[in-house]
Amino acid sequence: MRYLVLVSHGTFAQGLHSVLKMLAGDREEVLSCSLKDGEGADEYVAELKQTISVIGDGDSVFLFGDIIGGSPLTNAINAITEAGLLPRTRIFGGVNLPAVLTAALSPEADDDSLAADVVSEGVAALQEFKVAVEDDDEDDL
Image (cartoon, rainbow, N blue to C red; front, side, top):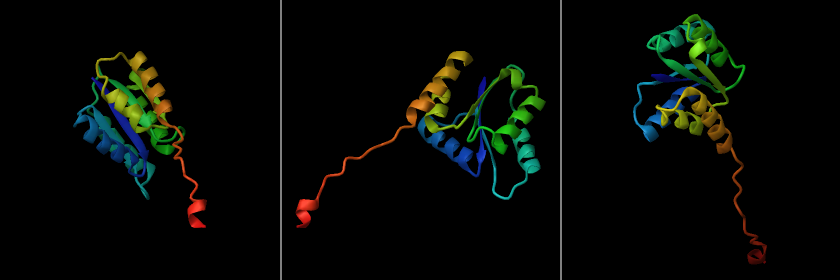
């Protein structure tokens, strides 16, 4: 099985997990853990280790973090390493819903091609949305 592990500051990871559940159904392979406001790194790491304890020897991991270099992702990498999962883990920073949705909806894809698709979809999804505004100045006169 390929596990999707979502980590973040605040409740972003749980929110992303919740929206994913709405769009793609409840998926046992999606796990989430967040560094909550006021929580120490030790508490977060303990919760994260408990969360990833279900990942087995034959499983792979796609680890999604909100910010590259942020505490949740760096601590998650350390926990993944300690659990012996790093050789079977792909790590992504700057996560968004389209990236995770792509991973969740492609359980049969191989890790290499899926990793490329995840990055492609995540990058393509972030765009500036421009709304045309009509000039109403004549109506005001």
